[in-house]
Length: 119
Image (cartoon, rainbow, N blue to C red):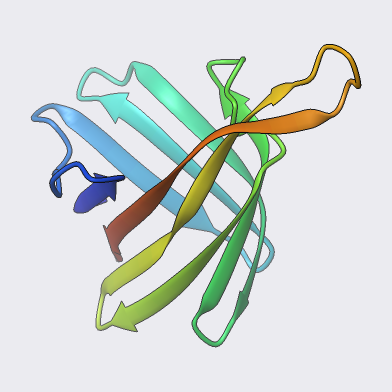
């Protein structure tokens, strides 16, 4: 990842010593954030769809456990410019409702990520 923007925060690059990678197959994605010593900070993945400039991820696993993103479907508008891939959407954080057992959205925020293809 070359940069990301959450909500109204300014655009940020990964902190020094932190590496973020996203991997795609024909139907699934995974991403990992780790430090230069190889210690995993967080990771996640699942299935995705891509049609024209519409990219949508379904978060099927996440570490560390307890993330409010697990099970979420996140639609993005995306653009590929050479090796630069930008996607923009809104992530929704969820918690299980103790009464119904269903997920309830507890917070949401715009998200913009810029990734660069590595050969």
